[in-house]
Length: 310
View 1 (cartoon, rainbow, N blue to C red):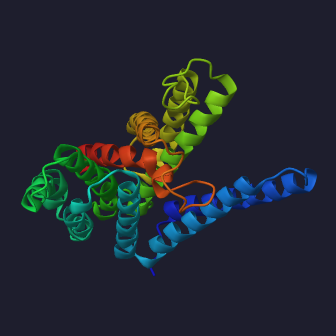
View 2 (spheres, rainbow, N blue to C red):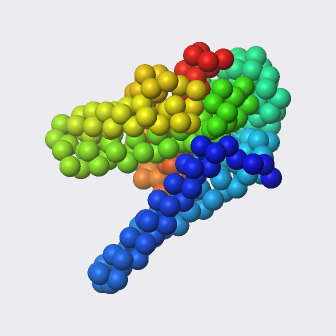
View 3 (cartoon, one colour):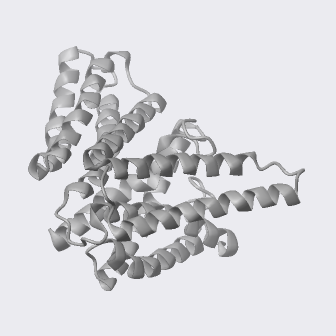
């Protein structure tokens, strides 16, 4: 077990208080309106308890445990993605190497080997997968299958691994530590989803992509961007090495990328004619349903931080 940095500890305590408040509010609602079904709300709050509890526990157990946990999330996300997308029976031999790539990618993270971390999947795995598929000797559906395998590796392994690499960057905000970078990214990404939803519900009139996600509106998007940009302006110096101005830009990046991450995964589900990517998380759907925005915000935020301070 390690001693958590004071700023990160404060934010983790605040998250715990928010979950306790949400639990109490649900109980009050249930007492006031016992006839109304709050099952989904209860499942969502319980799932958040589990997700937050697991993540915070890994923080306490140390960097390598947290990296391993994020690697396991990559495994679950890859498994879920491949379960919903059409692949050929013969592709199983190529898919094996996708799963093996998770071990290599997170080893590069744990060893802080940035050069290999940044090129292993987009260069070496990108070239190796079609070579392995060619050796199988099946030409029917080759282009479609290789595209699916490439995209699954990039989204669920490469993009997610940027979240883990935040843990091994040289610390420049000692009071928040590397955990502060992850907390900032996760909180801003998740709160962006909530704020865009609320702004859209309250003021949304102009739909952005009605055929893909009818609930997404221009007003919701703009409201979410302004909310997260303002919030990040003040939170960033507390949890990251960013200044107030740099934090505002980070908020703009996270809110915009998070919006399109959600929209892209919604397009995938529309194309496959499914509502959720899975049922792993009660009340939320699959792990990709919960991580859709994070798949886009993680790499972009990481490289923004890396460009400015490392």
